[in-house]
Structure formats: structure tokens, C-alpha cells
Length: 132
Length: 343
Image (cartoon, rainbow over all chains, first blue to last red):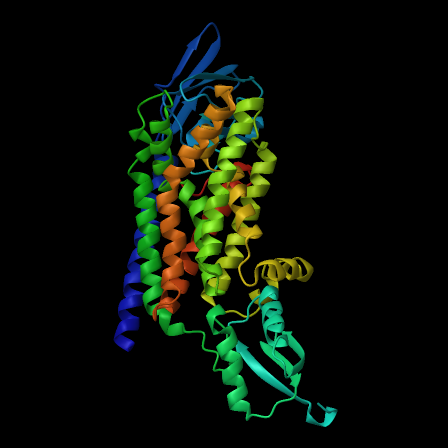
């Protein structure tokens, strides 16, 4: 019996440790990655950010210029999962995106500050825009 | 029958966990010709019986057990040794953790990308349903089904209870899907309602999960039980099987926050016809049926196996973990905390 308890605790500790490693690995991607700038383009004094939504959001971390009127373009193509249900808490924005199409979300210069979090309504998928 | 023959005995009832259970036991024992008064008490797990008994106590307890055995109760003279079954955790904890890790790995697999078509036919609706049932929705809908069916099986529910849930789900998806198809206005809940619903579902799952562990006694007092007057009607009407409650819960899953369900609803909305909307949603629900049915009927079968203690504790741990996941997600959606998980 004691042996069984030891084995059980051992396996459990291994799994919990593995899970933390797995989850923290994900966080590292968010915190340490320099962020993606390729999704950002500027024309006519307006900043455009392109994000694709399908089975999660891509890119996950975006670096953008702060204090610039910005249009966030979210592209869906055959998206039926949670990422179609977009929530941006800072903008009090929630919308169900069409399965295929592009949704334009305006972010004013005042709102384009700090870190903006976008996530799906169940919270499993998310992306960040870091205005710098 | 004179009063001098009337005796009052107190028996212990094992397996009596809900208000409805006390009613059922009272109703059943009252039908015995020599019993004049029955009072079942939930917190003490006791039943007090006054009647004209001529047999020894042991025999009475056996006879009473015979009457309610099919519902999963045992009547005994002495309080049966209440063991929390800590030993079961030796197996339950690793099994639960393997399942949880497997669930996360499944999400990593990126099933959502399997859907390439942007046209929704009934075929794609079915496949989307299949995918939804192993996706993030499993954390919400599957977790709720597991917690409800395992709890129901533990309390002596039968296959009817589980079937009513699935009938309610399919029927609800047909009628409500048709309704949004015909009316064309969405039944989506707003952002705040979604968050509140997510938190409520998470809390219900948390309490059900803790109850499944069967370790702490204080949650019994927190248990979600129907008010006694409602259960009285339900019990009177259908004896021990509750038909209405699981049916309504099944219908209610239409509104559960699940991305796949909501995008199917959005599609049903654009069909503009009752039948198309109804069929799309029903086919989608059919796609989710295999996994959900496995969860509910699986727990029912296991409830009669000798290793059920391990199963209930495993289910309890999984349900608690999913509840915490849902809670974290709901709070992240509300913008209160930053997202904890990203799959």
C-alpha cells in the first residue's frame, strides 16, 4: 500500500510539474517574445493591425505604435471555434464574427495605449497588442 | 392496534443525500401497513419510524432496505462507518491528472483547423459538432455533463435521468434553432450575461466536484437541491426519477458559452427558415452526442462497479479542475485578470 502511495504521488508530481512547465512555457512566449511587427502597417497616418482568427489568434503578441488611430482587422476563414467570438475588454467590444470575412475594429488614439488584450469569449485563446 | 404497541425506532440510511431522497424514503415507508409515522432527516442520515413492529430490529432494517435498495439506499441499525475513502485517491489523482493533461494536449492538436469549408452543410454541422465535443467546449458542456451525471449516478439516478438530459438537449436545439432561424434575431446573451453565466456554471461545477470527492461534509449544506416543495411534486409525479429537471438542463445547454455552439447559432440565424435553422442545430447537437453520451452513460455504468469510489473521486478532481479553468477564463473575459491559459 505504501508503495502504491509513493508511486501515485510520484506520477502526480511529475504530471503537475509537466503541466506547469507546459503552461509557463506558453507564458514565456507571451512575455519574452519581442512581439510581432509584421502584422502592423501604417498608411495615411492610420495604423492597421492584421490578426487572423482560427483555432486561436495569430500573431499572438503584436507591437504597435501608441497614440495613433488604429484599425484592427480580424480575418476569419471558416472559423467556427471560439476565436470567432471576439472580446476586447478594454474597448468593451464583443462580437460574433462571420465564419469568413474581415472585421474592422476602430481603436482611437486615446485607446491605443499600453497593452490591449483580445480574447475569445471562453477565454481559451488570446492575443495582445502592445502599444509602445 | 393500540398505542402501547407503537414503537419508535431510529435507523441510519446510507446513500440519502438530497431533499428528494428523504421524500422518497418517507413516501415508501409510509406505505407499509404497520407504519404510522415516518420522518427522514437529511443532515443526520437518519429515518425515525413509529409503528406497530413485531419483529426484531435487524429484520425490520432488512425489510426496509429491501424496499429502497433499488434506489441505492441501505437502512441499518448503526451508523455505517463513514470512510472518506482516502485510499481511492492513490488511483484517482494520477488518473485525473493524466486526463487533464490529455485534454490540454487535445486542444494543442488544433482540431479547429480541420474545418476548411466556409459553407455550412448538414454534414459540416455534424463534423463541427464532433470537433466541438472534444474542444474547449468540453471544458464547459462536457464538464457540466460529467458533474451532473456522476452526481446523479451517485444519488441513485437511472438511465432515464440521463436520457432525459440528452432528449432535452436535442429537442431544445431543434426548437430554439428553428426559432432563431425563423425569427432571425439572435438568442445570444450579452457579454456581461455571458460572464455571469460562465461564473455560475463554474461555481456549480466546483460544488458538484467537491461533492463527488465525498471528503468534506460541509458542502452537503451548500448542495444545490431543489426546494422541498418542488421535489415533492417531482417525486410524487415520477417516483424517484426526476424527469423535468434533466430535461430543462438539456435545453439550457443551448445557452452555455461554447464558441462552436454560438457560431452555429449565428449560421442558423442567417438561414431565415425554421426547418433549416432547426435541422442545422439538431445535426450539430447530434455531432456532440457521442462524447456527451459516453460521459453520462459511462458514469452511470461505473456507478455500480466495485471501483466506483475511484471513479467518483477521479471525476471530482477533473470537474474541479475544469471549474477552475472556466472560472479563470470567465474572469479573464471580464478583464479582471489576465488570461491564465492559452491553448
